Length: 164
Length: 394
Image 1 (tube, chains in turn orange, purple):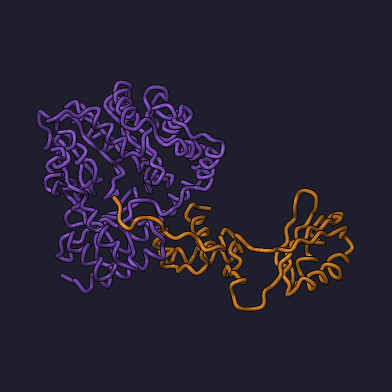
Image 2: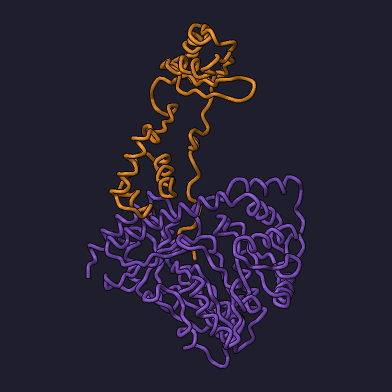
């Protein structure tokens, strides 16, 4: 991957809505090249989608509950953790899933409308899976920073307006 | 009975009466009274100092390290500066007796001049330049001699430019590349070209390299790294621009021992030492701040590319500045002078820029725009400037 390609990805990761014209100017490459690069990233599934970072606590709507669940599982011969991982990530409630090193194996991020909804998911769907040995559920209380974005209102520009 | 203002003024030293307040001041006063101003007039990074650096300073306070340091600065910091200069720019200064930590590069410039200028000495100043050089020379009774550069040579200085200004009284030359306000850089060949004249006339070089880290096309060449120039150079730099640490006021001067000793003597009487907590921050910046600095450089480059292209598109001819974070477009297509352009743009469209004339000879016909501000602000500024230019077509 070239430096420009990496720069392009970083810019898009920070701001998915940035225009191709702007990218072209910032990276000093033609709009056509930008388009071709993005297309190729999408084709290769390097870019999988574009989303907004939403602070739902400020949106005037029913809040959702997010939990992070540590799951211990027994891996299976031949497929390791992948099979059980797939069984878990196919549930639409599962927002993210990671294989971890350390005291547990899978980290599952679940979103639901209420705590009891999540509790039900864990007891009925997750714990009942054959390979799952144990689960520990942690509920998120407040989001301070997500995907590199700080959720508190950031400081304003403190600089004096004109300086040498 | 109290003295009237003029009676008090008469008591001021001749030297201080000789110098004028910076022309930037007027624009600052004007812009400060207005709301919704987009400021491209700021001469400092828009980043906050990296957290690890701020945290190191806080930790030093928590440990109660609040006393003076050695006059020349903490040896640990001088050693870190020395290592950094060797690794990054291949210039070697001994931490023990060739480096002095100063209160910003500004103090460094003052020290360098105070240690070497006698009344009547002529100091060449490559202009347009940072606003403090000429007044500081004047304060010492020295004579600042402007060496103008222009857009035709992309604001680089040539040996002919220098030769034209050398007299029997010339003792030194003040160079600052990458340049505030033009963004011009001087590559190795450019420097070698002027080095011959400088050596032939045995000039001392004051090299302000505060923007050394902020170059976007080629790596910076430090003047003392050139054959035969180390012995005749006082290198001035600091942490303000590279590590986004302007408010910490931390810089350094490096020079052969006799110069360094002389500067240390002044620093010791006038300043004692740079702020201790800032020195601890600087140690951390050199240890762990480089990754973040590199990210800042990438971001400045992207904004430079965007902004300079956009300026050219809206009809303000602008060379591609190789360093610092300023664009220095020509505004002659509007038929306005730099001052008129800057003032009208501020009043009509609320965009603050600095007229090129503030920076000395060669600045007329240009404005300085700092692109160290968010992309959103830059886009809005371009929109407003485009509207302004179409209204003020010559």
